[in-house]
Length: 419
Image 1: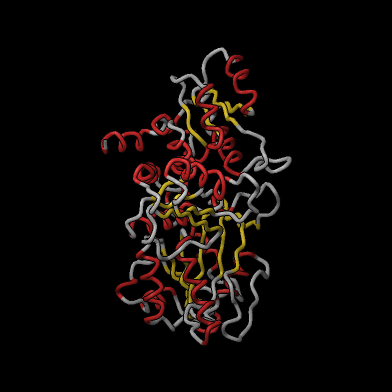
Image 2: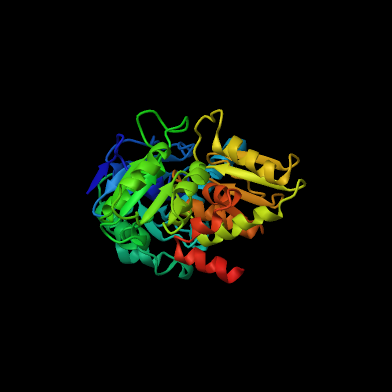
């Protein structure tokens, strides 16, 4: 069963299983996309190259849960500059997909499809082969499987027709059966680190960056994670934190703060009470916390001749005291010197050439899915560039790095072994 998601209560894109549809032009990707959704979300035409930019649509695929389908342009579109741009946008989807469906018209599998499977397999992305337009060809499953070369043998195969609906249920079952384990299992942000029934205090300053009438996405997701874990989240502003702590019969099991209030919150929370930030927790949830914790230590090696990249996944309009473009650069230059070069990028604009940088500082990645975040981290590792995130950076610059990491056993153990 599939339900198209909408509204303010819909699961954020970054927490959905991202499924990309890849194939040649006119292979039937957009028709399949529309059939899965039960609505005309992509333009369908017999003319090859109709889909230009990737088209995204969120939905509920029960019993798996929230997914995000991405219909891509034909990867074989190399006709002129526009065709190259279309194919390039489609290839970008490789980096953020948790699962790929390779769509090929029944009976036409060839070297091009082999290359697509190779790209996805190299990223350890689960692959499903969908032989489309089977209402025109009438091939059986055994015939479709036999058409695959040895390199693609063993991949789940579905024969289908978007026109008649043949094979759509089989494709949905294949998606559920082959989804990455962490989407089938219940992921946790911090709820697994404290016992059920524990009180967790969340410090949420209501400053200019807080959306009017709402909380920011990481705060909402942490609250839900704690509720799912049977914990008792208590949300307070930094101005009421002392009163909150004094009112508790016993100390909280954990305090989680906005990273920008790290210094003042650390001064109020007793040393024996575990303390971290939303952003540090998201380094664990969306990225690779041990790797990013090690990356933060590269701050000590920066000089005025160094170059730093600060990357933010979302594209909100920067405010006067924006964390990525103002606060972190100011703290870094205060420590290193005014000559430190800092570049900022937003949204999907993540540089291919990272070798010119001495450090990459990324946001928590709440609007990205974990595969996209890990792809960015891996790109930094491949370029030999340390990578960390906003919360870890602010903890380091405020002198409370060890305390912020102590909450997370794996990262804490790695740092201790590295000393």
